[in-house]
Amino acid sequence: MTPSIATFRVVIDACALYPLNLRDTLLRSAERGYFQLYWSGEILDEIHRNLVKNSFMTADQAARSRKMMIAAFPEAMVVGYEELVAAMHNHEKDRHVAAAALKARTGDRDEQPAGLRQIACGHRSVRVTNSPMARRTRRLLP
Figure 1 (tube, rainbow, N blue to C red):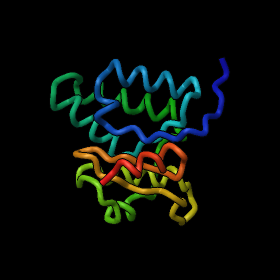
Figure 2: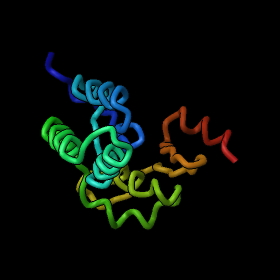
Figure 3: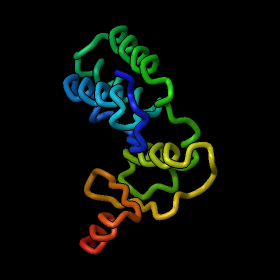
């Protein structure tokens, strides 16, 4: 099956790529073209670090897994987001993910996407745009 080019862009954080079953499901879904997968080196470092720390993989196994993920999805790596981290207002530990998501959305252009908002929801951030569903959701937010 030839994957289609999805327009839905997703930056997947380490917490979603850490569990093997969920990682496998997400990577297979991206491979099928259900969404465009993005991550950063910092996200991959976090996965590697936690897999080794929690003894799910040896350092060599985790490094091999990372290398295979990058080889399978070379277009997924987001770079150049680091200068955006300080501008994010979500939880401090998740700011790099929000910045990578913003960079993945804008690509190489140095612009703020129209209608993009960052909303802190507990320890997770939610991106809300100007879609009709987002406008209805914003009315529910404090």
